[in-house]
Image 1: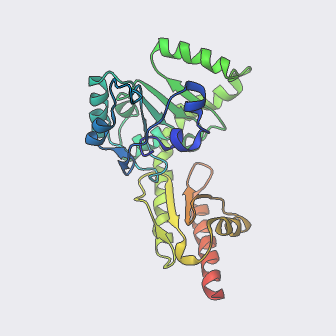
Image 2 (image 1 turned 45 degrees about the horizontal axis):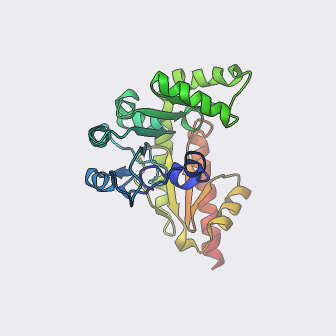
Image 3 (image 1 turned 90 degrees about the vertical axis):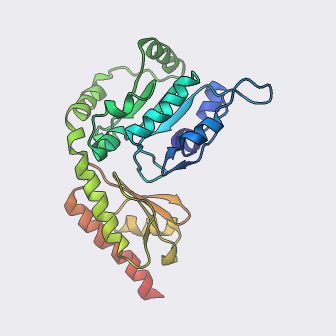
Length: 269
């Protein structure tokens, strides 16, 4: 689901299991749903179809390689949903990265949704935690569901304190992570057997290793032995993510070690 890959692909069918709803994928362009496609996807009252009750967007878009949906596009999609009286939820796990990438306040993106989730770890660097924002009545309802699902947390201040630091002090440094990702992509893209699949806007680099002859799992194991950690994003795609705990110097070291793994394969053949 280009609209929100996390909800559709990664959350163990939680929406269906807990809410009894049927997700519907809408193909986007670099993670952004086109307005005409959204209009065609909205279902009204029909005994053959479930009616559309919620639209979920993701910004930045994970499966699209950290692509940013602009405020203009967010606004256009939101207007359509408002016209059809459909609420919009924004999966903003990396919303601060999106805002930093295009140089706008986070509110310029979150304003075009009814509810928004933001991850305090990942780019913002907290050890754990996410926040959910929305109208007071919605949050009251969400707290009850959190309790029902066993999500209560005692002594929460232990995590709230670094969460506050993440929100107040870590957003301004996100462009550093984006610069690291672009440098990584530039150098890896110079390797003849590697191909950068995404246009790097934020902190995610998708590298296709198909020409190396490695499987993703084998490639990742060799990288791990060199001290470089990444994740598989497909049979021949590796996702590298830059963040606070990886310095620019370490990016250079990672480039050398990745190149070493690739070159060893070439020499072997």
